[in-house]
Structure formats: structure tokens, C-alpha cells
Image (tube, rainbow, N blue to C red; front, side, top):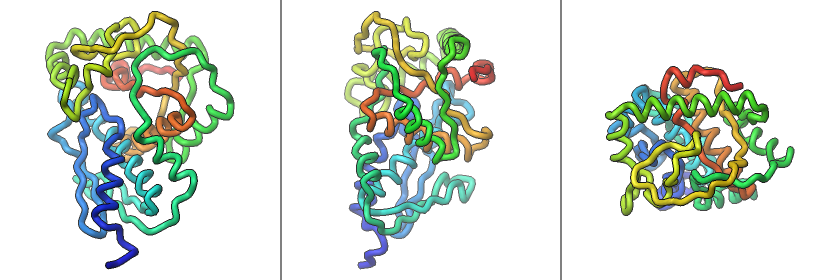
Length: 278
């Protein structure tokens, strides 16, 4: 037995944590392969959302999230990851693991994985400290992304307007509605959006419509802090990196005892994606 190579049990344990990563409509569009020396991550294109994600942007972002979850879980199990991103056209990442003593930070971040939830309800008004904001910003920067807080009223209004426009366009698209219905309102499936996690009211402009929603919400003012995560370019590699950064941000938020929700609907349509909010 080569102690410099992970065994199958270790890899399966890391993947079991990794697949808790957020993905668009909880579609989990990834495929894992383990050769004994390397772990390969591919996109499961059969799970791409043809109407909501025709270009596969959200698919790559989702796979970036699971990639970061995997390297985080592996680090807590005592394995550092060397990641070769997009070495081949059909391969998103080739990962090699090397033994390394887990650091306190590795364990703390991995511990956040099973605690993290996508919470679509209104948030209480709880101003973030400058220290917490800096932690969140740094977590994105490590992955070649930038996290910006939308503090000004014009910025928040611009994001809200883009979300409302995207929602209205999607509501008018019957093909999108059929696809959404097939992926949401689920009761027992391991993928898709569970009915218990979808909010009944659609009054909040940043909350996507989902079928058969069961989760009730309050009518209180939403005190959520709004952020925009961006990359230098919009290449497939940038999208994968954006997913890694998004994973790092939501896990860091969980460590800080903060709820989080990734909002992607305004980015799914070219007309709303092109709008300036920063």
C-alpha cells in the first residue's frame, strides 16, 4: 500500500461531502472518476438545464462549487490537492492528492459543509462587521474572484430591477416553466429543489419561483446584505473559478453563522446579465 496515495474510502468520503455543494436547481451536474492516483471531475451534460442555462454557464459554476467542496473536504481528511483545471476539452479538473497534516482552518471550513443550507427566506437585519466583510471578500480573492458589497441604494435598485425583469421574462416562457416544474417541488428525490425549501410567497424580487413551495416566510423587511461575485473574464475557466469562489464564500459565511443564498436568475438571460449594478 502506497501511503502517499489516497485509498478509495478516503476519496469516497471527500466526494460524499463535496456533493453537498450548491448547484443550480440542485441539479448536481457533475461526474466523478477515480483512477487510483488521480480524481477527475467532468460535467454531466445530461443534467444541464436547457431552458434556464442554455449556454451551460450555471453548469460550470455548479461544478466549480463542487470542486472547491471536494478540495476542502480532502484537506480536512489530511490530503492537499493539486488541481489541473480544464486540461482537456471534456475534463473540468484533474486532481492529485498529497498527504498533509490538516490545519485548523481546513477542519473548520469542512465542518461548515453539512451545516450550509440555501435559505431563500427573508433575512433579519443584522449589520455585518468590517471584520466579517473582509473575511468574505478574502475568501473570494483566493480563487481569483472579486466579491463586492452593494451598499448604495442605486446598486441595490439596479440588481432588484434586473431580478424582476428576469423573473417576468421567465414567467412568460412556457418551456422554462415546464423545466422549472420538473426540477422543483420535490418531496423524496435526492436532487432538485425540495418543496420544503422553496418559499411560498414570490413577493421578494430576488427569490425565484418554484413549484409546489411549502416554506412559509414572514412579511418583515428583508435585511440581507447583497453582494456581487465577479471574475476578470467570462471564459469557461472563469466560470469554473467563479463556482470555486462562490463555494468559498458560502462556507465562510456558514462559519460566521450567517445564512446565504446564491442568486443566479438575473445572470441567466443576456439582457439582464449585461446590466450594470456595480
